Image 1: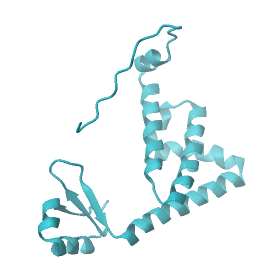
Image 2: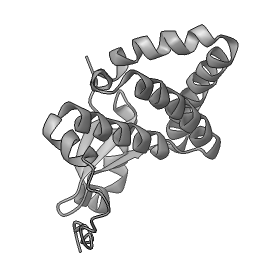
Image 3: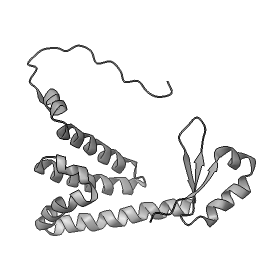
Image 4: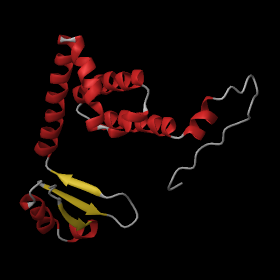
Length: 163
């Protein structure tokens, strides 16, 4: 069972900062989810707690890197068990699962060296979108069809929320 962090409205933090932060300290996760009316929620935690999270990811990544360097069989094993962690990889071709594994581990190693885990999330999101394409036969056919040298025109800029 997952423990939920304490929650508060952002306005509570502004109006009663000591009381609101105190709620974070007694939370089992030592964090506080701050709800904002017109923006994404924030998560307030201590710097030490954030550093611990990066350290855990870094340590785990170092173990995976060492394992992959130690044995080619480890790559095969991890490729076979990856669907337990990421069930959607079942839609990827076999070679793509291995590519995802290698990119995931390499990105995790580089990201934790910088003290951030955001690039790891980006890699996961990108590969998940790739799996979505393989899972949809019509979309896959449309994206892989040979259009020859036909110029299909300009691609409009995507709309960005909040602009």
